[in-house]
Image 1 (cartoon, rainbow, N blue to C red):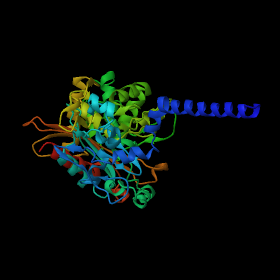
Image 2: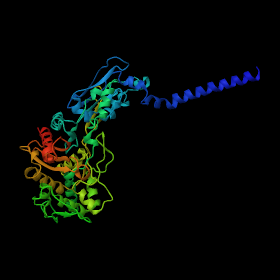
Image 3: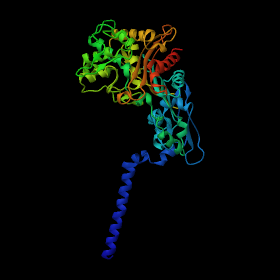
Image 4: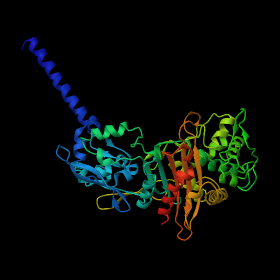
Length: 482
C-alpha cells in the first residue's frame, strides 16, 4: 500500500471514529435535551396524539379534547365556557404553547409526568393515560364575577380567608382559548396580540396598579400595630388640609365637607380621608409602612398560586412627602387584585393570612391523588385586636360610608373603596377599586374579594369604587355565601 492510500485510509478511519464519538455523545449526553427541545415536532405530535387530561372545576371538566381536522396532530384542546375560565386555565395550543395551569401541569395533562408511569412504562417509554388538575374554583363565584365585570376592563379575585382557596379569578376582556388551540389559528392569535385591551393578560395576577384608598387599610394596620394610635376610635392628629412635608402642596379630600380634621381611623376610612392617612404614613415613616405592607405580601417576587403573580410594590428611598402619598395608595405603590384580596382575607381571618392557592389536587386517570394541596400555611400578619378593629371599621364603611353598594342582607360585610389616579396629573380615567370581606353568621361561610375596574366606559365623574367595583364584589360575595 503506497503512502497516499495509507494516509487516506487513516483519515477516513478518523472521520468514522469522529462520527461514532459524536453519535455516542448525542445519544448519551444530549438525548434528553434534544428530546425536550421546544422545536422538536415529535413532542408536539406525541402530546396531541391522545386526548389530554382535564382541568376540573367543582367536579366538572372545563377543558376537553376533540379530533383534529387532518394533519399529523390527532387531537386539539377544547374549552367549556373558555372565556369565563381563561384566567384560571390559560391555553394549550398546538402552535403557541401553553400558559397558566395548562402550562404548569402540562406533564400531568399529557401523560408524561413520571408519577404516572410504572417501572415497565419507564423502560418502554410508553405514554401513560394523562392525569387531571382539580381546582378550588367555585363556579357560582366565577360566573358571578365574570358576568358582573361584563364589558369592562378589569379583574376580580375571591378567596376563602380560612383556607386560602381561590374561589374565583376573573379578568376582562377575556378570550376563548379554543380559538387558538390548533395549528392554523394564526389569524386569531395575531388579532389577540394586536388588541390594545390585552385580552391575553391575566389582570387578576399580572396587572399591578395604584390601589388608591384601599391601601389605607394597610396604613391603618401599621399605625395600630406600631401603637401610633391605640384604637380605631381614637382621635388622630390630622389637620385638614394636610400640607405635604417640605412642599407647598396640600393633600385635600375628595369630599370637602367630610369630617376629616383629626378624624378617628374609623371615620377616616368611612369618609376616605386623605389628610388622615397621608399624615399617618409620614408619621410612621416609609420603613414601618413597608414592613407592614410586606407582611401582607407586597414586594414578594415569588407569589405562586401556583401561577406566578407579578409582585405588588411598596417603594423605597422616599422623602416624607412621597411617603405621605403612599399612605393614600399613590406615588409608586402598586397592587394586583390578588394582593388586595389577601389584605381583606387576612383581616377577615383574625389577622392570619392563609397562602392563596387555586389547585386542590393532582390525580391520575383513576382519580388517585398524585399530589394534594392542603389549606394554605397561615402566618400572622397583624394581631387579633388590630384585625377585629379594622373589620369593625370596614363594616362602618359599608353600612354608613363609601361602600354601601356591597351590602348583603343577613351577612356581615366590610370593605374599603378606592379611586386611584391614572396618568400624568390624573389626566386619564381613574381606576375604581373595592376590597372587602363577607361572613354569614348562620353558616360560618366567609369570603374576601378584591375588584379593580380599569375602564368601564363611564364618564370620569361617574368613576368610583362604590359605583363600579363594589357591586361586582357584592355579587361574588353573595355567590360564595349562598
